[in-house]
Length: 140
Length: 138
Image 1: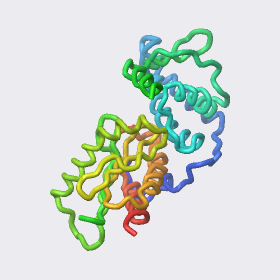
Image 2 (image 1 turned 180 degrees about the vertical axis):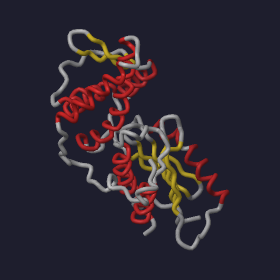
Image 3 (image 1 turned 60 degrees about the vertical axis):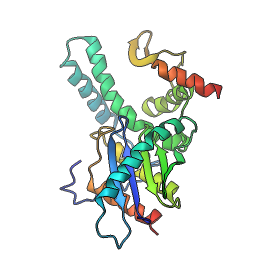
């Protein structure tokens, strides 16, 4: 981030983090969203590549959202167990993104891929090491 | 070197994202030997932080290691960015970590900032320095 033009001051770092309750206009959001999808769509030749690109874009959104949401909703307690993390995504993340909680939480494999099957189902594929670690933690 | 303090944020690939040294007034230049040592100590503590972070729900992991007179304290963010601080006293570290975490979140919400990329912002550095003075060198 280049701060040559701001002489070392940054407003963003001064704003309060909790409960700003800012609103964005629906048309601005819709425009941005449609442009993102069109941008990806015009550069790929297959549906799966489109899905990958959109997922990549979403990944950085999710990464920054994670910190904010954990701070706001859970008061600074991180999730260490897989199931709790999934529940967190189902309840908090979905609520902040789409206004309501996700419908169902099914049991798990690993590696996040988006599947189109009766509405959108996100299958999350975890590495074996994660499952093993989770089992070890449960046993403690 | 008592009274000085070293802080580093480490990303997912053990890459440094941000580092800062606080020296008390009266030591005009930092000794280069000690700078390398600080990085080494913080890096060596990463394994311990990795182990400890699965054991508790908290972000603040207290002291994970000790080296001569330095205490290594650690803090893990929700996105698993590890923050380590080398200090000779533990007073005020928790508040410092919380304030820096606040600052980091605001910085990371920028959609142009890639997670794990090094933080190069004068405003950020200034604020961290201010927080360091406020919590640790008083």
